[in-house]
Image (cartoon, rainbow, N blue to C red; front, side, top):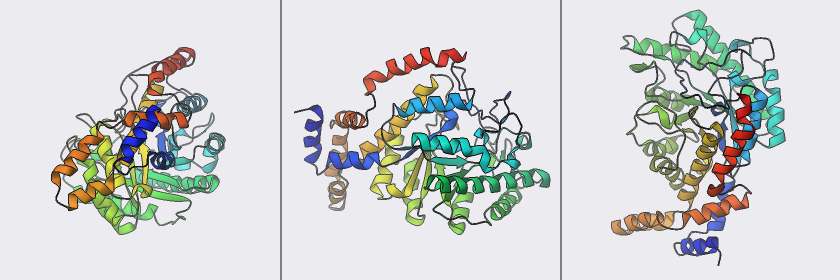
Length: 416
């Protein structure tokens, strides 16, 4: 009996069909973020790749993608190392603008035609994000909530164009493009007129969303935040702000795991949100003592998020994207580790005997529930994961270091 067949029989004892689980897992798309490959630089100016305005990447490991062609090459390499179905999450600053500078209030569909063509070729549908940071008109910390009419009009136009582009992408690829809107608006020190700034943000969003797009083409998500770099004392688009705005305006919430206190249980928010909202967007990251976007690992917090999505029965209503950027290690390795970790968490959750656990819980069998959950930690999960990787023709964990190290020697180091 093969290791997988042994594992299959162990899980079957508790009513879990591992073959069905692997089939289900293969269909859950994870949206891979483009910005890990070039440290959130983008390609607006040929001579400038600078993150800022609430975004900070640390490290200077060799091999950063310096062109769109290099970035696509790296993403294609990642796709050979991660099992399952995927999408690509693209920021507006990654358009193909040529030698002419195109400001963000002037972006058009044509600047993303190359990405659409490439995504078709590699089978990687696109999601989209407005880029409201790393720009002179974001230097004072405010964009859509700015009290300067000129600044606010610029960013409102950017947001409108992003929605139009997202709908166009959705039409081109035949599946809805998920558009996430996150603005870094806030202040480092105490703010007196919080109500005023939030009123302005609401007015800006109201205008942006005046144009309605078919849900089969694009879906809007609004990303909440507790605090961040340069906005330690006040964030305009707080969790409460967007919770209320989304509920009243039929918009999707984006919950970024890095935008809350490190001790908060993000998974506990999901059942409440999904009870009232049809959909949710997740940006999965790994916070460590700060609003940081560390590489996702197969740890308890990520597993708990995956468990809640599965247990709520709302997994199909959830859009899962990744959001981290680490320039201190091999960027391909960071991507691969994070994508695979999220997929492992989903598999771990899907392998749990939910019906039996609920039966124990409702029957007052507290020990049975606890014991069965503990058992999940020692069942042969690894053998099931290896089978999933094998079915998708990607390497097992044992081979990743050698493969990624070889890519660094033959491709990444040439860029230096």
